[in-house]
Figure 1: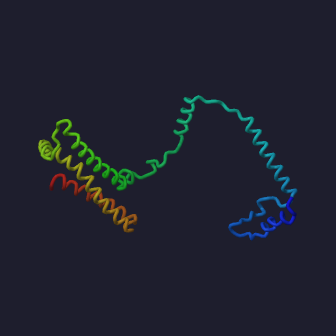
Figure 2 (figure 1 turned 90 degrees about the vertical axis):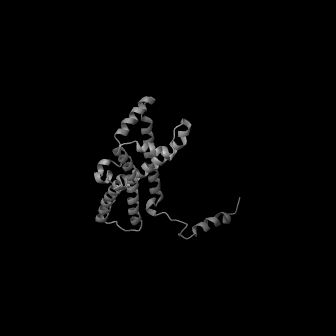
Length: 204
């Protein structure tokens, strides 16, 4: 056995530590002070745990088939709120918002480029001419209305993406965040995009 002084020495060392970080003192309000209060607190805690255990043992469980589980889950999902719901926004923010149309026009331009180059690679396999001269000849056979519609469908995404991207450069510089300025910029982007796309499509 070790001497009593050897056993008590580390305890005394721990007691002499100052109550400062990294050591943290627990407030006395969290635990009862006297032994009698501690005993009563432990008894009440044990009784509550025993009551919880009894309630858990008396709970009845029923086994649900997998098909029924899926039906229950589907009904629960129908009651869940949809966020963000389109009804919470104004129509000009969801349908005419430049943020959404920036993505739509970008995907349109990117998709057209992918379709063009994929067709250019696959066309020789099927014996179809897809070079520039063949495209010009095929485009010339179309009616003026069809030619204008095709050019307009390609010109509008390009012009909108260009003008809206220019507006975003001002936002990046911290300018134009006022409500009136944002409304004017929105109208300006749409007006300039429509006018420029018509000029490009019909060569006015």
